[in-house]
Image 1 (spheres, rainbow, N blue to C red):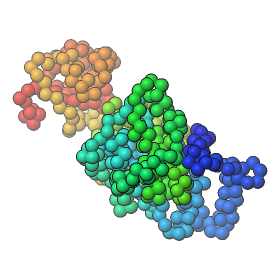
Image 2 (tube, helix red, strand yellow):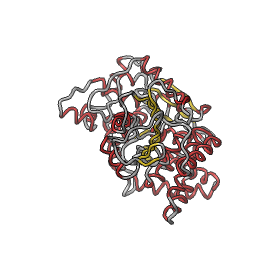
Image 3 (cartoon, rainbow, N blue to C red):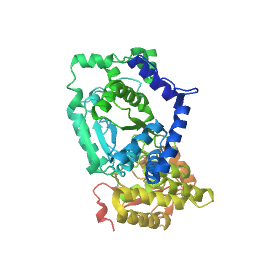
Length: 463
């Protein structure tokens, strides 16, 4: 993967500058020789200023926590060292897609990394792609994305801002809209920018290739998206850009354009996609496997406790600020046979505390242990108002599916056969069992509670 990305970057440089990346002089050359030379310099530097080198290593360790890849790590190390020496914060670029306003833990993987770098004094520049959002990034999409109106982009951006500052340090964050500079480019400047790459190169992107082969429309304007995102890096003089692997082409284009325009190239930090509560699929609101950053502390805590045991350490790495050394110690405890549930309780408390504070996280933990370990009914639970025709458990199966309590009627019947469904504290034996009035409280599985009442009856009136 590393060689493929370096090759892609070199190809982009060749197209724009007319020359390829030259090997280092003196024999073997290439990344290996550069790394060896950098190591020699580090040894000399550490002898001269050990405190500086310890600080550099600590920042690198935090920057690398949970990441897939850094291009180029030696560039990032050099930037960090110079930043400390000159007491100048690095400019961290993060572009946000304004097409979807709601944020869950999956979105915070990259935000959390930005915040960790802010803790060292670096400055984040959040770029809201109001101009590029009107085009829509085609990355990973099989057909042209719907273009957003300026009003839609601004509304989504406002919602984004309310949520991202649950993670980012507001005092070290600058929010910019890329229409500030992209809308001011004249046609001559746009043509000059476009002359730096070719259609053949853009068609190498998998999403474009697939659409081209299927003879699906590809708008000419879509080709400008990676160029515009690259120009964002030039305009703000980005030192670091963060993004997912789906943004590899766009971020490397930013490095290339910076080099072409005489700027120092940004380091690229790529973060992985977070799996949802099922431990398999990407966390997504549409799949129902998400943890929202604005959810109630009790709900957030309970959801974290639902993740599979084999994802505990991954969540520690990607969505917490727990130090890498401590994560390694937790891994050791799991390897030594400690109950994963105990480590998961630490995870749930840590994540809940990040968004609700220590006191609320402690209460959420107590609530979880009393309800889901102690057998007490939760004080609050989803409530569904039934009609007169809904008299048996089978009658309410569509409601359970609609509220994502079960996936299907067959799953509900299987849970009943396995003894996983109770009504008002009594185990349910038959799927056609009559509902209890004035209320039926179902416990489905270990942690799902739902209250059924009838039309005209408020839950506060139930004795």
